[in-house]
Amino acid sequence: MNTHVPPGEPREVRFDEYHSSDALRNAAIAARKRNYQDFLIVDVDAHHYESESYGEVFSYIESPVIRRQALESAKRGGRSSMLGGSVGYQDIGGRITRHWLRGKEKVESGKHRDITTTLRWMDAMGVDYTCLFPTPMLFLGTHPQVEIEVAMSRAYNRWLCERILAHEPRIVSMLYLPFNDPDATYQMVKDFGDKKGVVGFMVTAPRYKPVHDNAYMKTYRLLEEMGKPISFHAAYNWSDQSLSLTNRFIAVHALGFMWFNMVHMTNWVVNGLPERFPKLKVMWIESGLTWAYALMQRLDHSYKMRTSDCPSLKRKPSEYMREMFYSSQPMEMPDDPSILEATFKMIKADTQLVWSSDYPHWDFDLPGVIHDLPFLNEQTKRAILGGNAARFFGLDTKPVKNIPIYE
Amino acid sequence: MTEIFVAKAAQLKDGDRRIVRGERGEIGVFQQGGAYYAYSNICLHSGGPACEGLIMPLVVDVIAEDKTYQGQVFDENEMHFVCPWHGWEYDMKTGVCIGDRKQRLRKYEVVQRGDDIFVIA
Image (tube, rainbow over the protein chains, first blue to last red):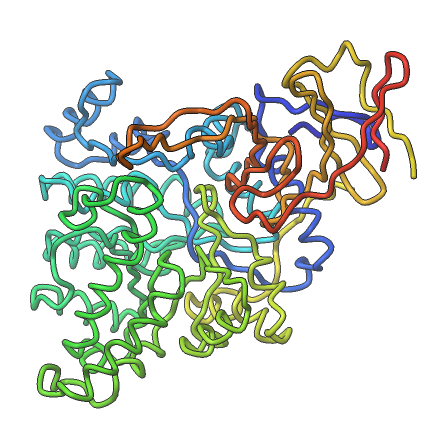
């Protein structure tokens, strides 16, 4: 994927070098053709690989005992480590080449590598601001040691704030909450809520604590008072009793990324949390859209017969769900666009849908998934691609990107 | 129609490829098993560089006479090229999209004149 040959000259395909912009040259060409430079695009869910900076992150662990465990266990690959990992093969047997080529990318000194590579792909896609999340830590909520989740998330959040967010205004984040420890969760919001670039807080969805537990109410109240959103970022857990029945990654991924958010959303609504925290902004991340379309109908159907199960509700479940925000990726693309149009209508996409890339993960979306839809007008496209997120996060709406020119 | 120079025949070994620019955009030209194939380098999914990923054999579920599953194998009689952005696979010989066989990449003719390989676009 080199572009270092004159236009018109045949070029080789190289597997010994990598550059995030060049890998997305087709996206940059598409972005220019669609005039993305003229309006705001916000990516509410993208990632970096914090594991590539573990040496730095671990040095932020407050407990000297856990810090030593982390640093020592990271020194010897191939053995069990303190953090463990998740079973899965997201790169489809190496077919997603950026996953193994990205280590060959060269960056200039002076900026953190993650800032440089993130800005490269953001500009190539036409993104002005991105909300950056970790990758392996998406599975930290299933760690058997609660104190490790707390220690690691505090270290990561400090590292992210000091090494990344403080230095690059186009990168923001909703910080990881160690949800298995409700007091530590509360303290995290207290300690980090006012840091530069912190636009909210995030709960990784694969976990086994119910969101309606009384222990979390003080955190929700604090978030509401601070005006900071909470989000639930989907992932899978192949060790989950039900999901362990699946035998292919496609299955655990398709189901897992919907499943945990469906459970949390159901608990969130039927326990009346939208009534208790009416000003708390809530976003559901990386479950696609069809789950919400289905769940709204499912809950409404049962609610009309079982209002006594959820007496806190004053309206139908779908009405509360329609006031929450949904990230778009991985956006299902049915052959018949009228099906997608109905989904957009169901979730009130014009004000509640926010585009996300999930880059650099295997199933990322470009802004074109929204921009090229035949049933949206220009105003709605721009709202979903950036306006809604700017409102959600409180971001400036002036475009600041610099899309590279490839032809 | 324009003939676009791709490479000297000796430069394109089995499994090699070149990317050239045609009037409608980039074209990927492969040499696979002694034959040449050329396709649009724009993936039908989201516009990725369809011809710039791995070349992989078809994966097959082995189902026995009694319908039991016996594992998976590669079938090198059907080679695919894979878009590196998301993994969409295309049949090397036809350009048909494996995940949705109603779709196929635009195919171009490849000719050899002496030692030179050209794609007609």
